[in-house]
Image (cartoon, rainbow, N blue to C red):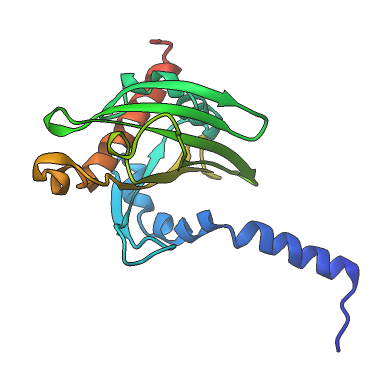
Length: 215
């Protein structure tokens, strides 16, 4: 059996904790598309659901915001104002805030007047030059199955650009609408690249407006 000095073991543990984070799997995609996204383009892709490849896919978008990750986090944490810039959101109500998470109730207006509501828990994690803002659906006992979605989860990953004051942005989300009446499930479930592009573009526009003091 080989024994390693404590200092080497500590370095290995730090390396694993930082460089094996899920957000680093986007590093190659960002590098490959850096020229495009730095000119303002939004690059989207479809990824398999890592927990269950047979289910619906994650839709992921890559972009560049000409502002700091802290400023972006301020905007995406402003859940109660999502109705002003996020597609399909009618209202968000904060349910509970703790030291580790924010729980909020979402009220959405889907195509053909279909209304759905759900509760998400949001958590922030930080590493060197990276901020991650994750969310996932949690139980809302007071509503029935027909009123809500089967599943919602996703994350914003904000990666500081070492060559400027800007931020590389990753938005990745998964949505399973569950049962939708009148045979319209296929339409509501079409959480598409266009939806992700709108979310990213609207968020970037709101960040820019905030920097200019327009709200």
